[in-house]
Length: 485
Ligand code: GLU
Image 1 (cartoon, helix red, strand yellow):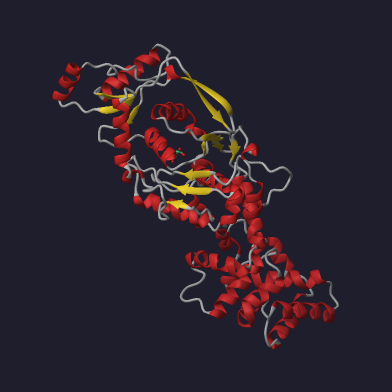
Image 2: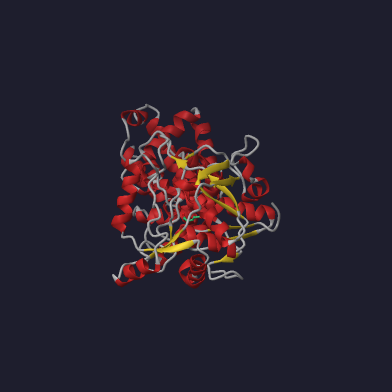
């Protein structure tokens, strides 16, 4: 591969961008960037009923969010446009006409019921369900008769007989299909719209695509595309079919295994670089043991020879682990920005966030940042800061406050907090230190009771965060409530 590499991502806008599509987009993008080639994004919207502009937008937004950009294509333009298939209908129409004239394709007048009955009959005979070519050799007379009956017609491609069609695949090696198993397939539907297999061939060829990297679910389409390339006398790109993504139970990835759309992860506070890192490992394996990769490292290292043939397993625990890593590495300001909508939704904050409030929220975030696998989880960790009605979470917590030393410790703590000018994490550390020193008690005998008195819990964020977050007034309220000082 070199800088003449031209790859594409060609989504059908029939729903949001899914994990599998995002992985295809990423693999193509990495190849383009690695070899200094071009990435093209084309919208395959020939399924008029299921395609929508809303889905198209969702897909493009998700790509942008992931940091996958493109050099040419939808929204970007370029020399090979338009990049939306419904805007290229003339191109397909002309090509179909040419194929008919050259005897590579023909009009078929069979009804859907007739076609279906034939498929069923094939299956009953233990053959691959396919169209057997009834309309292949209609005489002009027969054709006119069918036309006069007002029958709908499609254009079918005449698949050459008795040939082996070989997909030379960079991931899977040579995959051989018998042409007789394919059956003459539709290339233009009765409404004049091309089918996927036809449009994709025209576009990949006309857009100068050198490598087609896509999911394994398209492998069975590829022999159809190969016979079309040949008939159209177009240059065939190199194919690479990336394995399916399965759930942990080895069944096809579905909602049962976790969200499948990229947007769902974005909405839960996953970070784009974490998702990219996770997606690349669905099928590609690096040389060493490294699992965390920057985009730059991926661009330097990604290659198709380390893309596996066997299925990739979608493991949400791994995604959470990777995302947790990136959250811990992120500046707290970034996580705070992401956390605000979740805190609002939970009812913990309302109204405008001024600078002071932001700083306060940032401290809250810092106190729990290392515990988060994704930002939405923050609401589970921060209740203690917002609910001034402290309840003991357990018998064990209540017991902590029964010790004989407690009234003395609490009174002293109260005094120090009341006197402190400002409660910062550093200042708090100093207060706690002087407290243990003056009371001549081990840290444990001081910190745990204070924690329980302020939160009702024996665990949680560091005390030197809890105290500044609560601030003096709320600390005094809580102490009065739980230990009566
Ligand atoms: N439009 C197809 C899809 O979304 C893409 C097929 C291809 O990459 O050739 O599945």
